[in-house]
Length: 121
Image (cartoon, rainbow, N blue to C red; front, side, top):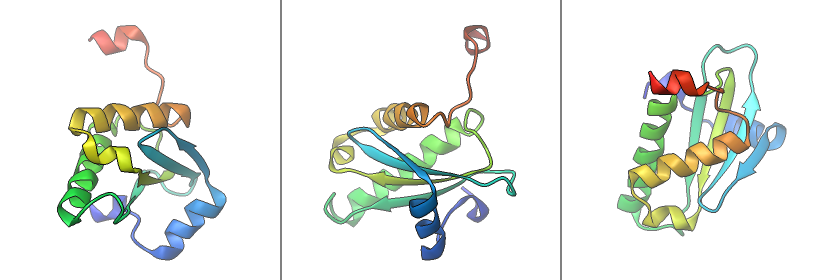
């Protein structure tokens, strides 16, 4: 994922936390902040040391990044997303992470609606 699609600075994280809306399920908390001036989405990741060692935390971050890459055509652009992983995420494989993220994003209305006909093609 290119650098322009990532949130790295603490001030940017704080802005999303304070001004954005949060949506959660058991595995993830997602903060979403609309940004009208940017024509793409950016993601920021937070995986606590409580979840596991560095290898486990990095694996979860890779799964989240790959999930967003695969869902990028369905995601609403002009948004900043901050994803916080919760402890149950450590026991999940890639497909479980992706479906859990999709669930949380649907709760936040961050996934574009597709008709059934589009999905079948």
